[in-house]
Image (cartoon, rainbow, N blue to C red):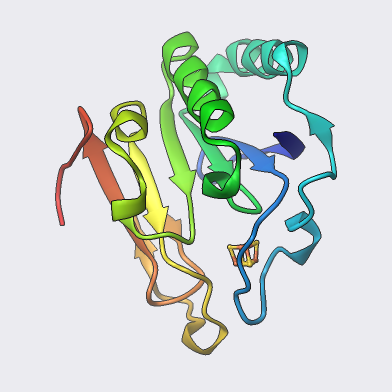
Amino acid sequence: MNVASTQYSLNTKSFEIYLSGCNGSCKGCCNPELKDFNIGEELDTDVLIKIISKIKEFDNLIENIWILGGEPLDQRYEELASLIFLLKTNTSKKIWLFTRYSIDYVDEHLRHYIDYVKCGEYLEELKCDDNIQYRVKLATSNQKIYKLSGGQIEDD
Ligand code: SF4
């Protein structure tokens, strides 16, 4: 599993991890440069330690860790599960997963370590400016954010 880039957003106080690769074919894909699984660098132990150190160094500025792509759920399952587990257990941050899949695709094990899941494909014809959930602006009106607690959906 490769990480294409990381960045920080002051607006959402989020440290964002962009994983490389997606098997989807959303019309008008908003991140075509991230569809290739081979770009970026392998997210091995050294890279992960660097990421966690950076999050700890800027602890006061970071409330959330966003995992995006590409498509996180198209990654090798064990590698993604391990990443989510290590981020959750080594930081005190809220973990967000951004996926085009439905909430049913996020299994119980992953749900246990995730606080928010953004679900739904990018559908060009449903592009909008007013779908704001949990202070996050979503690109299309079909997309939804689920809040999880202890692996369960908190509200619907
Ligand atoms: S899920 Fe994202 S990266 Fe994948 S095809 Fe859709 S818009 Fe593009």
